Length: 235
Image (cartoon, rainbow, N blue to C red; front, side, top):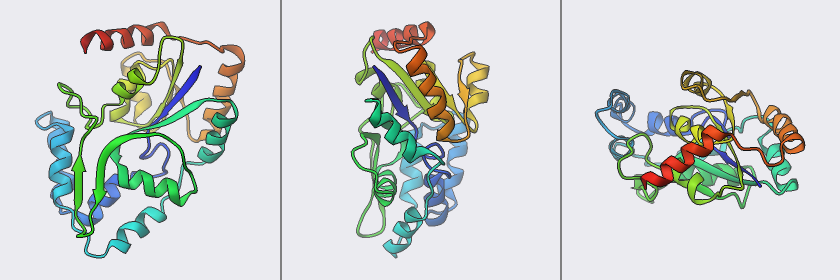
């Protein structure tokens, strides 16, 4: 069975919504703290806690208006229907905000997609409540471990498809059989020798995946399979 795991910010959406929220409603620290993450001196969880603690939104309508204006990457809704028609399980794997994802999907009348992400919600006082239920001990790369999602919701008989765009995606991409990459991710994968399909929109993803379904109904990339086994042994 083919299973699709898809990043959200700048993959499903056209722009990075988390950065828009932190940049507009947080203090300058909400953005500059990520320099520590890139330098390796703070984990993603630490940076999220600090960044979110600076956010204050006295007018909640401004927050929801910002989310309502977000556009999806071209072709995503058609791709979602393609997956449903072909009985392909699609899940959102994000290192972002639960509130952002839920509201944007609802604004586009999209329901019933399982979402794996951080529990970051807007409170009535205009602050952010943060929880990290998918944090993995010993991993500082992501606050919400996407690899854990792939490992716990697939088995050896599945063909894992991963769609992503950036830093939080190269690790799950390394254990996927078929990878679609945009923005910064192609260069990261090329550096690590991970085969992938660059894409600009989900029409391209759908076209290529259609070919896989026809020609390789039970495709498995051996390097990805070994990587999954390695991660299972580490737990």
